Length: 384
Image 1 (cartoon, helix red, strand yellow):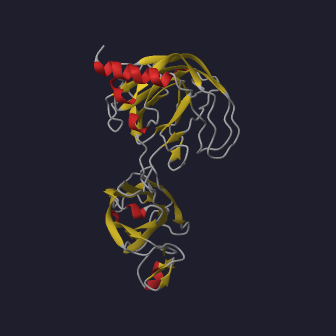
Image 2 (image 1 turned 90 degrees about the horizontal axis):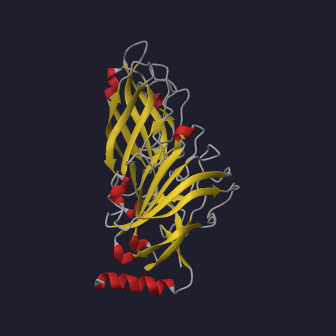
Image 3 (image 1 turned 60 degrees about the vertical axis):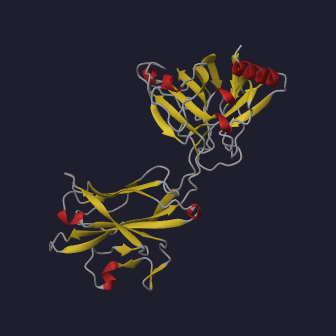
């Protein structure tokens, strides 16, 4: 026996003599619900039998697993902590493969098999009964562990990443049973000023927007698209997105926010208000449309300052565009809705996942999925 193999075997033997112990991955998921989310469809469900399948592969840094070595004999999960409503009982057919891999969790392959290590082992294959769960508060409790039909020999020294690979099919309820997951410490946003009476030249209003799911956070990417603009007004190419630190109730230039733009003697669409202070602005790109109000304006992706002090603070955005008066054809200002943004921490859990749902070819048939960094299901690993 090689010295390395002997050392691993000795570590496993020593660990197996100890009492049952557990380790949670990611390790901080039970002490902080920051970034908690249910974007993992670990136990997918659909009323369409041909697409009632899912493949979810979690990759976890072995350096984050508090048990250095042992025989893993079970795994537990819990219902999502983000959506706190009740969930319906269901039964799924499931297989679970484990391995320890040299692939970094920060660089997963879209090919499921490529992420596995040489010691890949199927530890469960059969029906999995998922109970009905009532509405609850954070933190939720672990479901009874899924017992392995064969124990998995684990040692941190085997590699950098533990790969937990679930394939499921045939959910009897036809609905998703949402399992708990952790993602990056994300930010949030809300409408700070929506103006239903502020109409643009096409009679539309600025009332909807799209953005990166987890923005904003220090060092993270930020983008924004605003919709409801006229479909083809060349002057809208002159649009800027304004950033500020004060919104409605604050002040700008000695004026209480919001205020009517026309009250300053500036040509503007009727009833349109400005709602934030003005610290800086960035140019926006106007996209035309054949629909009267199908146009949009957006900023290209930017990177937020990587300053931890931003966590927990807020900022505001509002766009300002040069529209055209529908009657006089003269230029007038048109403001968008204002959005308030709350900065998250940007803390990244040491994990990632590769997923594929609604696989019409059948459960596990497709060799590839979509990679998602800094997020994965939360599991309790059980060692004997």
